[in-house]
Length: 506
Image 1: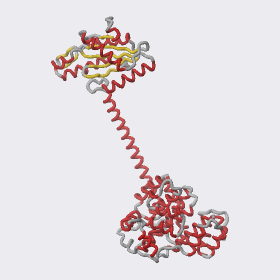
Image 2 (image 1 turned 90 degrees about the vertical axis):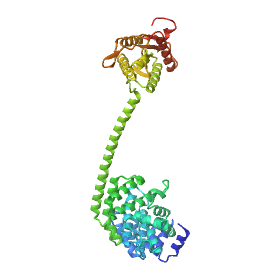
Image 3 (image 1 turned 120 degrees about the vertical axis):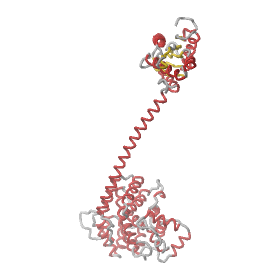
Image 4 (image 1 turned 45 degrees about the vertical axis):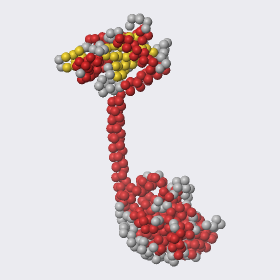
């Protein structure tokens, strides 16, 4: 707040100020030596205030077995701090209600203040805030700055183009017109009155909880005040759906309250309305019947729950579709589009996994490198489309002659790599012989009236516990060298790397 605005507030003759009785009560509140006797002496000087304290001590808010007949009994029921806060609430409200009116809708102002006070106390009980009666006072005074601003700037609310029941818009108008909102002015005024710091904090952040640090020890106290104003809006305004949605979001964010809990709070407020009207000699009945407001709130809550369920179901279906899409993508990335065998990238992963498993379990692992013989001539003579048909047919032959645990991937072009887990040289030889025979006996159809036979060259390298390899790259390189040996020796055969240089028969 600027020094200029502070000077204007201090110089205003009509600025709201506490009456003598309230000043005495504030003095007691700030005096650590205060006791029942001193407070009773102050209350006795104001019979109307004393009767309100007796009435509230006998109200359903403080169930007591016997009727409370004097102030001493009332203080025993209510407690010293609670009585001070309640007495201050009654005395300040009575004084402030006599403030000279200007452009502010005072009937609406007090309706909102008293509804906020009730809501504050109920929220405080629910959140187990020790200073629950002080919360009641904070709820009543949270919009105090509006009374001050109405006196210092008489045209402020007169020229407001909207409905004063729209508190958020009214606050935005204050910010636009003066550069600050009534929460700041109200907090400053409470400081001038020497009221507790937590009251000042709560009023300052009543319309903007972001001003209240989460680590602040009185944050819960202040958040109750913030929510109390929003709850009052439910009873005052006609657009309950929007207000209820905003309220449920803030209540969960600030105090972790559920929507069902909020409906319970509205029900308790409805029960408290008649007693509060009697205590403050005012008419608090909202423009809508409280019961209809509760029913509307429940309906809004039900619709929100149904919407939430619908959104959850949509999210679930979206997740299922996404998972299916990702699965398809993963499958696409794993398998070569032309041949259906493993892609080069996935083949590399499978090679590494199979090798690590063989080493860990001390098992055999054989790799067979396959390269179609004279495949370039197929492409050159019959075209690439015919070559693709041969590749597809060759892939089917390889897959059909492997065990269920074996894998085959396209290494590149017309080259394939076969992975045979738990297979030694002798077992892999049987597989290679089946493959060689299958290729010799198969005619690959490249047109409706023409087919051709393409043989394959194979090269084999085996990792065993007795003759292990240090890495899968060496194993693959040896298989590649073996197939090269087969190719340069006319193809259509399998070369075993270990026997390649010895000249032993394959």
